[in-house]
Length: 109
Image 1 (spheres, rainbow, N blue to C red):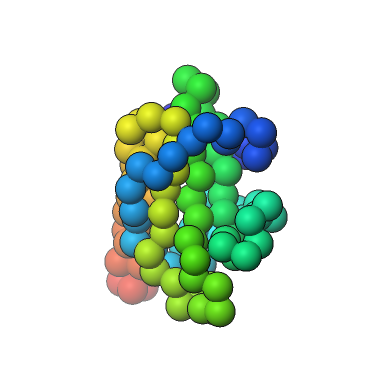
Image 2 (cartoon, helix red, strand yellow; image 1 turned 90 degrees about the vertical axis):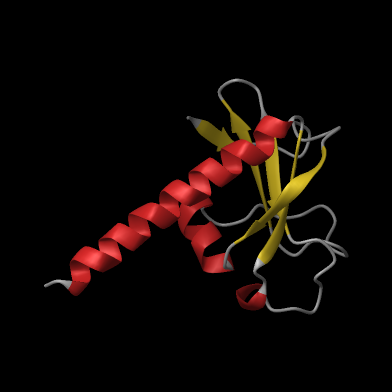
């Protein structure tokens, strides 16, 4: 499933769809550096994505100000449909699976 970085304008009208659990570093490895948030008083880091079918998704920490990003493990997912959460979970799982396989085989050397 192909996606690209989205703009804040493209994410207009979205709503909360669910939560994922992942360390900040994993999200950076999978999605790149976060987008600068427009809601700096409520969000420290967010990723805005648009998928090839028009689905949009945002991953963000909600009201975790003061908590170092490295300590955040629970991230909100917003979007324009239930597919938003599904796509994020599918991509994150794929990335976690690759990391697990790589760590197993690197350990056998």
